[in-house]
Amino acid sequence: MSNAPLAAAEVKGHIDAVAFGIATVGPGIAIGLIFGMGCLAIARQPELTAVIRQNMILGFAMAEALALIAFVVPFVYANLD
Image (cartoon, rainbow, N blue to C red; front, side, top):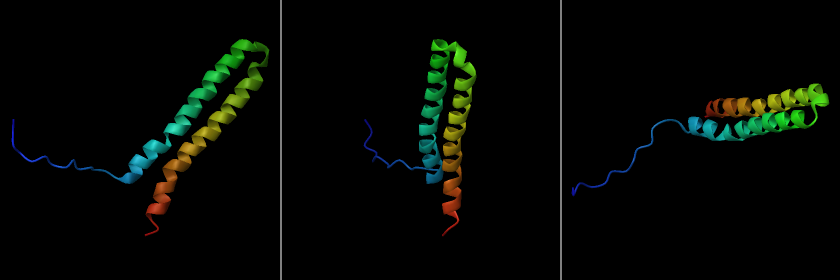
C-alpha cells in the first residue's frame, strides 16, 4: 500500500454543460412517453390514427421546445456579468 496522500478530484468543464445535461432529462423522458403512449393508443383505436398522430407531433414539439429553451438560457445569463 502506498502512503501517498489522496488528492481531491478536479472537476473540469463548465457548469452550463452540466445544467444542460440535467435539463434535457425531462424532455427526453417526456418524448419517450409521448411516442410510447401514442403507439399504444393507435394500437387500441386504429381509426383515430390521424388525430393521435397530430397530438403526438404537437406534444413532441412542446417537449423539444423545453430542451431548446434549456439550451439557450445558460448562454443568455452568462453574458449578464
